[in-house]
Length: 208
Length: 208
DNA sequence: TGTACATCAGTGAACGCGCGTTCACTGATGTAC
DNA sequence: TGTACATCAGTGAACGCGCGTTCACTGATGTAC
Image 1 (cartoon, rainbow over the protein chains, first blue to last red):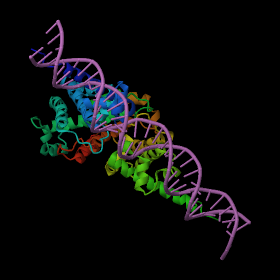
Image 2 (image 1 turned 135 degrees about the vertical axis):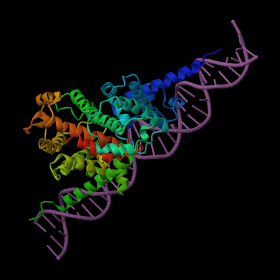
Image 3 (image 1 turned 90 degrees about the horizontal axis):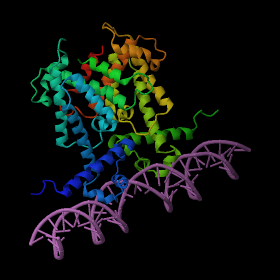
Image 4 (image 1 turned 45 degrees about the horizontal axis):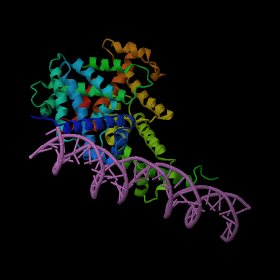
């Protein structure tokens, strides 16, 4: 009985991975919009058309890169303790390990690009551990006006039986951490002198 | 005695403005990386090389667009009451009025692009009213650990004699508002159902 | 007011480039008997 | 184990495209006497 994966399938998967790896390097040096199949092929010592054996075109490759980016964050969260501070620091590590991957997920949207359904599914897979971790926090403040609004619009947290204050908190965690991280990754703090990591911790403190 | 601006100078300024206007439209529909001098020329009913009478090249045009984006935010702040809530709402209005202009300032950085000095000068011109407004807030909490760190790295707030808690607050205002705004402008809230404006107000409340 | 000249906006042709993508093909790899 | 065949990875040529940018030029506009 032959292996479920034939040698050819194995090889295909390997070359596809190598293509993606070169694509990431190219994005890191020249930005996502400069991604070029021909340039990748040249870098791999192949002719341009050869890549069409592996990807239907440029768009399919970019979509897969975006999907992989989302998936890697989801995987990171899955491997992290379901506690807000732990998730926050995991997010920061993930973002700074490869800022271009981070920006592919949360950066300037590509005009006209619409994410396929499976990517939005991964997006809510990312939100889930955050909601669970926020549910474990203590809530001693009075409820904010936004809580009643979010109570009425909670379908994005489908399946999570948590009070509205938890939904609110999860959104604050998301936006506050993203605020520091995106400015840091974009280099807007360089030259200001302070340590962005400490500002990140201070913002994290505001959420616990 | 002739006018200080000759008719030719007037005309030049007018055409430069028209070029920039078409550039913005192009950025809005196809993104900043797709900006093309030839396409702008065609849109204006001119031949491509004609634009070289007005801009030395593509880079000079992009740099001027970025400068104008920074400047328009600085102007918006100058025309706004120096109060945190007012500045915050002015920022949101400015950002959502033209998300691509916002992303040109705060979005994914262009790899290899380094802003000229006068742009970083405008950047601190933007920070100034925020610092002043934060100085007018009440501070009843105990000082955060980050305050002592920012006290030691405050050269970016040169000329502002404010306590470290104010520096800290200004950074929090900047990052928290940017966190909500950038995710909203990038469309990450679409499909979630809630009103991003109310989340923005809730984050603003956390800062007052 | 009229003429001679200088300035300069805009044109069209041309350069070289890299892009995505197609196509017919060669040659190596794997499969079936 | 050996041979015949099918599969499929990769090539090279070609297509049309739009890009930034240069250059020598035409012709209109403004200036000086």
